[in-house]
Length: 206
Image 1 (cartoon, helix red, strand yellow):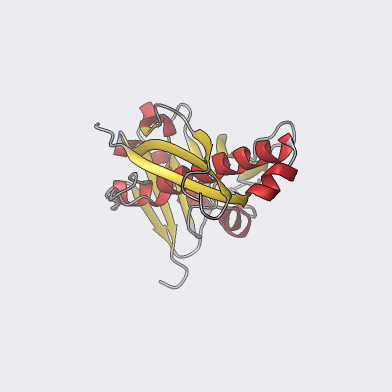
Image 2 (tube, rainbow, N blue to C red):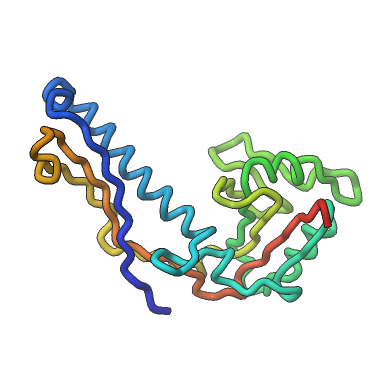
């Protein structure tokens, strides 16, 4: 797998007056927000990246067909077990479910198995969301509604060799007296082993 070097840049400008009045905590806040913006761009690329000028996401980076995708009109217990069964055994250790918050609570939360036991079990012991049949759930609102991904994310690669750099400069806004703060990362992402992922699509209108 070859990773490219895509630039992810977010710039925020403030006036010199505001900078002189601001406390150190304000600059720390700006640095944190810029870092979060860059990371959100990477997170969106992991799901939706096209591979053109950006990373390649799960949606576009894997060819989805009947061998690695479950399609259903209304999510049922059998769809969950079918998706788990489709994932080859070697990838099951550490596999996780990923979906957005709406899909979790609209389609998964109320599911019961054949013995009327909840399929999704919330975790009140730590910061994790919970588990579906023993597999951890990750909530990511970059994933579209009515889609679930099940797989081992060790086989999805994110390359960010130099991390995120946050810098300030007055050069570009010399005439206006503004100070620019820039968050930048050189990064790429793409599936390394496509067979490590299964997709569940709920097509209610089909």
